[in-house]
Length: 165
Image (cartoon, rainbow, N blue to C red; front, side):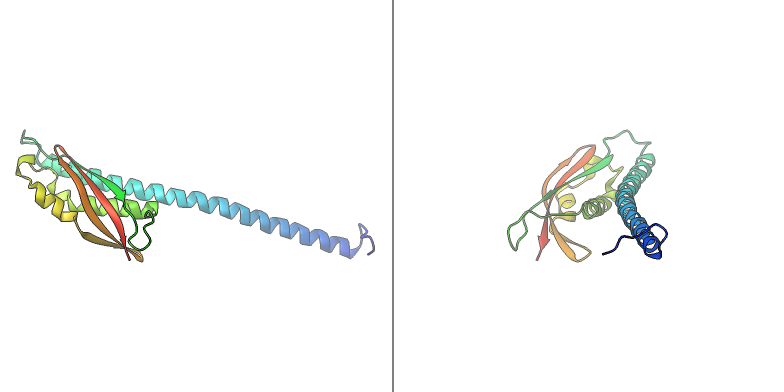
């Protein structure tokens, strides 16, 4: 092969192709970095919106019951425990967005209890609200089982999540 000379058209063509390839590769790399950061921002925004919804409903219920000085339910805390997949016995892998959606759906079931007197709440009925409930998120279906429930000023509920085959 012959050498390319600086003034020849082949030299300019190779230079232009190399420049365009570099620009394209740089744009692709920048796009990958920016899209990853945007995805993480979307997750953060979804989590913050769920927190705001929970806090707003809690505040509204507490403001309504502010006049009474009795022992009132003030918050709901949900802890998700992921069980094994029924098909192959593997531990269930759940996306962070799906976990937040399951958790917020469970909290929404108990919003009506916020601000009520703890003495008037039936613990068995509270457990039955979520126990053996099936949630469908996307293409996956999950069945929920209440493992433990503690009722005080804060309702703490532990829920085992399993994937339905």
